[in-house]
Image (cartoon, rainbow, N blue to C red):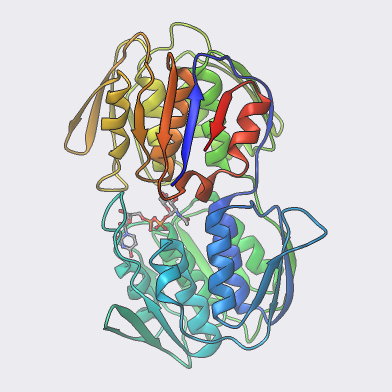
Length: 418
Ligand code: UD1
């Protein structure tokens, strides 16, 4: 159990350096399964989720570890790959299921546990499976595991009913070693998909169209080890942007890619928050009179579902009423009751919340249900009167925010972790 105590109402000021993208790093580390030899991945955030994927790689017989001499660098030595992913790791973190595509492509078979549900919804894997079947794999579910066979995967057209990030990644990885051309239609367009494609291309894959809804992959006989640098984490950047706005502070957030935060920048400007993007930096300063705004989460380039809880925290203290609609996940409102405990006025109506802005929040003991809900509570705690106690029983915040306490302390937050 972990408890975070935040004394709120301190203006956050100074500079924050954004870490590498968690979601990119997870996909790229999974993709190293495809590359025999030694690969070096840089700008990998030091997070619980990354440690989990490293443990998955090790369970598959791959040597993987953070470099002893270079910070945020993971070295992977890959020779023989086993085909069974362990139950306790895949059920702990859904992204470990994404190894199914690369294991299959590399070994001709894979046995991976079903990841199960999580706090934000049931999160099925049918699209991953449909995609692998289209490449000629045979799939059976048995005793909670997905068993897949496919010695000679063949390229094909794969239409995804929803532009799922994970399914796009699974199919893209498997297709790099399939025979012939694979076309993924209605593919996810998230920046992490482009980053994975760039990594695979550096390793010798032939991929075009990543970042659009149609990705073409020409299969190759083999891929080669590489050195690669992961893109910055747009969700961490966005969380600090909201930290500046909600504390009426002034932060310079460094190492961002402007396109990746565009939807949030537009929304904050609509809310009359001062945002200035300059090269790979963004300055955000908060002031009184932040306005309410409606928002709907969508696949990229729409407003990211991974920023919805944090934006809700900000809208809870904006002037006026906002409607927030979640279209990506079915149950991503676990932060609502906790924010209400802190004095917010938020009503849940189906897949939307109606947020009536209040003049201020007050501290309360609150519980973290999932990673981004936890981020929303930290932001609310930073803005609230008094000391907020955030109980993070399952260490969710460490899954997604590198050195959160240190980064926040450096810009003026009063925060202690017990
Ligand atoms: C990834 C991100 C996560 C982000 C999400 C949406 C990683 C490690 N995680 O998760 O942070 O919130 O994208 O941007 O990259 N779905 C199906 N069948 C499937 C797969 C997905 O119905 O086989 C549904 C899901 O239940 C969900 C929606 O599709 O409702 C989107 O999920 P998806 O894009 O797959 O999210 P993840 O890849 O799991």
